[in-house]
Image (tube, rainbow, N blue to C red; front, top):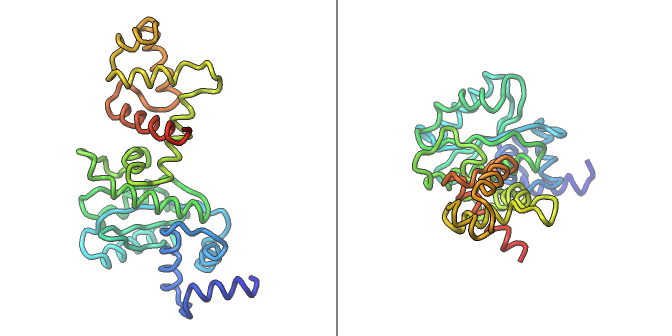
Amino acid sequence: MEGSEQADILDLLAGHTDDTTIMRLTFECLLAGLDDDRVVSLLNIIGWRGDFSCFAIGGEPAESLGATASAVSKAIADLGGEAPLIGTYGRYVLVCMRVQSAVSPEVACTAVSGAFSAAPLYLSPVRTGAQGASHALHETLFSLQAAPSLQHAPRPLRADDLLPERALLGDEIAREELYCNVYRVLHGEHADDPTFLTVSTFLSYGGSLELTAKELNIHPNTVRYRLKRAAETTGWDATDPRDAFVLNTAIAIGRMRDA
């Protein structure tokens, strides 16, 4: 480690070099969206080296914040995991952990779920490296904040369950996903691809096959075929009310971004 980098790290630690302080600072940096060389160095100190795989879990504590943190740490240790990053934001407890030994998203979520209350619990996808850890914590927090918008929230919540709501809250990761994986995919690879026009027209007419067909001067069966193809390529079905909301949000984000 270069001398200047050592100085930067010591500045962040403010003279405290105990493991608890290092892990707390690392968590706060990642949650704040910091993933630069200084944060990578902090991760190296606690044993998170290289392109590690990780994921995050978050929710409201079943008891006190401290009791939940202790229960989560023990559950992860029992699975062979080391040095989970645990912190709080408001009423939420957030945990980022490496994929190691028996620690995988599904197994860990089951193991720690009892430490959280019956309120929504979020489980992130597996991410890689410092940036991935930051993204996992970031999307966990936004998902928990957006969870009250769902009348019946699944447990655990997953990344796609709250994409439009996260975007409305200002989550740039969700906005980017809606733009790249929905809006751009609807446009297809060729300028004459009719998918986007068909889906956007169908949505603007409130899901009416007949009005969409009339507007585009095509047969309703052609509309059905194009909507089915759009569902296959994007993963979102315009004929489903919830999926239609996702598509409408993606289209609005894309139009504003490309204006």
